[in-house]
Length: 509
Image (cartoon, rainbow, N blue to C red; front, side):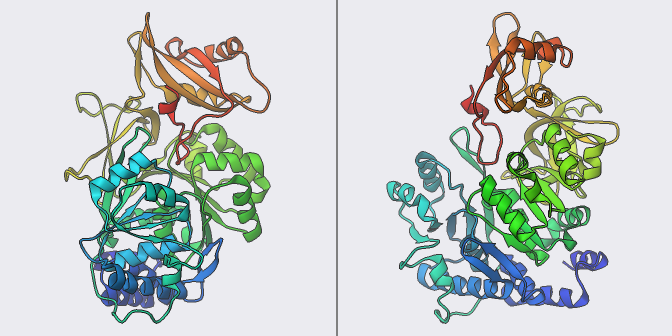
């Protein structure tokens, strides 16, 4: 803990007063997320913490409301250490209050995807036996249809008890805030195949110090005063953005769901300086109204592959302000490309951030040479594995060049063998996206009598211009190897996407 404080002081993120406030916050309530909010409320009392569709909340008021919610959750719902609390909410202030309040009780917190199906929800609830579910009204039908026996609280409701009304009730509850260590925070990963996996971690300032410092310094976040978190907070990328912004006293803008028109209007009308998003969100805003993004000084993209054409378009319109993050729910943020890195190569993931070790392994678990694709395996102090293994295999294939830059080749289960050659669909996708008349592209492997497997491309044309398949194959013939040529090309009006903006290839098979 002391080493962590020394590093924060050294780079001037913490003054002596700031160190005192942080230590006092931990002493008062214990090592949990509320200590972060308590510190922010003392250091930035008048700053707006959250702006959403319900208005603005200062850091001082957010702390008071979260502490009030903590007391009532403990008194009325017996939320305490050892209990399991699920949050099924979109981005809004009641989600933020609930995250901090549950952490202060010491209970384990599960952030559920609001777009999961009834079958997925029932399976997950049966596996974890939640003691309480905090949810948005939009998923109330799903909860009513499930055999859920846990207690329920809605996030917002007219005239009924809700997280919002409890947090703002004032004076209710006779208990005092007890010192407690934070329980686990669990986010979901996967889900497109029908079953979610979990990634759980405990709040630890020491373990998260290296990535926090590296990101703050390289992203120049200490000078940013406003951030729009476009990604869902229930994803690892979203909640990491929330915590980082809170530590810096930033004004965080939240919308319940991403819509390109509302997102552009929010950024333009409030002169927002930074945004965290997935590439699909950036693509849609750049198509809709790039001028609305002119106030941005930092765009942080993550969660999916950032294609080179989008990098070039963003840079040419908005300048060198685009950053690309790579990681997984289990491994956390592990690789980052700065604007300078993206000038070096538009398609690079960047370099490993401080504290991360990356191995690229072949099928025999032997490290591959530079330039050779291998399975990406990551080790860091903040990565989590249920079996205690220090290495996490991300499920992705990638290679490293001689300068130390990493590049993605796709998922390990995406690779096909065509005529004896290893073929990576993502490489064909990148080439297709370079065509001026192609908006989106996804490539999968299909069975082939002669070659064993071949590629099939799904293409969304840009505008009304549809390139004949033979003409597109001719264009590809001088850009890709023979074994990379698609056997079939299918044109679509839109690709199916996951909630994180990745092409949902399971639905294309």
